[in-house]
Length: 74
Image: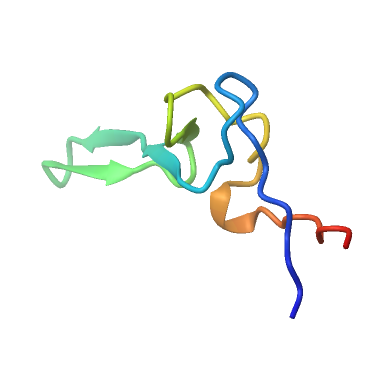
């Protein structure tokens, strides 16, 4: 069974066993339909440490679900 190294927060130094990911979407009002429409992927994402809420976006550039941990050396 493989074991993976859990990354640590650069601020509190605890393992990132939980990460908060917030996605901010952009919408534009369409005068013809009278409703808002999503502007494709025009939003942004912010990832935060589950312990201290420090910004971890630099570690998860492609989003948390696309992160691949390195295998732990035995």
